[in-house]
Image 1 (cartoon, rainbow, N blue to C red):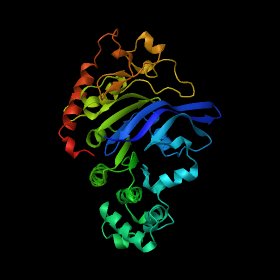
Image 2: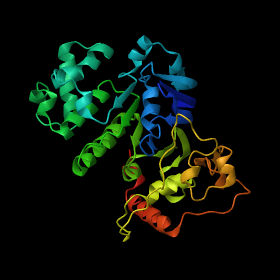
Image 3: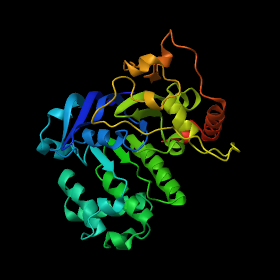
Length: 353
C-alpha cells in the first residue's frame, strides 16, 4: 500500500505558567491509503494532541510543534502557513470530534453547515451544494434529508448530530479522516451504528482513517493496525492481531487486562496501579517504570528503544532485550487477554474498516 501520511519524530509542547508541558515526545508512525490506524491509551497520553498537530490545530501560543516532520502526500505540513493549511483541512484531511454539540454551530441550520466546505473547496454553487448535502445526509442514515437540512442542531438527537458531523467531515471526500473518540458520548446502540456507518463509508471511498479511542473493544472491530501511546510516546505498534494475541509492552498488558470479557468470571477487573507521569518533568528512563511491576533497574535509568518483534510489530520495552529475563503477563491478566482476543476474533477481518 502507498503511504499517505508519514510522521517522523514529532514533539509537541505547551508553554504554561508552571513550565513546558512536553505533551508529545518523539512520535513516529505512518498511515497507508485505505487503512485504519487506531491510537489507544489512557486520558492524557497524547492521542488527541497528536492528531490535532497533524491538522495544525494546536493553539499557538501556548502550543507549538517543537521538532519533527508531518509528511502528507510528500508535503511537510509543519512548514505550511495557515492559509495553505486551510486549503487542506476539510478537502484532503478532515476530523470528526468527540462532542457534536461543540462541533456544530447552534445558530446555523445543519444544511448550511455542511454546504460551507462544498462551496469553499469544491467550488459548487448553492444549488449543487444543496443537492450534495441531501446525498450526504442520506449516506449517513438521516431520514427525510430534504426537511432535516433546514433544521438546527438542537432539533437532532445525539446520535443524529454525530451523523451530521460525519457528513461534514466526508463532504469533500477527504483522503484522510481523523476520528477523535467519535462515539464517547453515545449509548452502546448508537455507538455501534456510527461505527458501522464509518466502516461502510470507508469501503465506498477507500479513504484512510486515524481512530482515537481508549476503548480496546472498539479497536478490535475497526482497526487494521494499533499504536499504543503512553506519556506522549508510542510504546507499541502492530497489527490488531499483534496487539491482541502477542502484546509485548507491560502497559499494553495492563490495558488489555483492564477490559471486561464475557469469558471471565472474575468479579474485579485488573487496574493499572499508580497514575501517568507529570509531563512538566518527564521521568529519566521508561515513563511507565513506576507503574510497572516488571520494571528493572535499567528502566529507571535509560529510555528503551523500539525493539523489532516482527516486520509489523515493534515495542519500546527493555523486556525485549536479549539479556532481559523472560517475562509474561500474570495468569489473571493473560486469561482476560485471551478472552478479549477470542471475542474480537469472531469478527472477520473483512468486516473491519
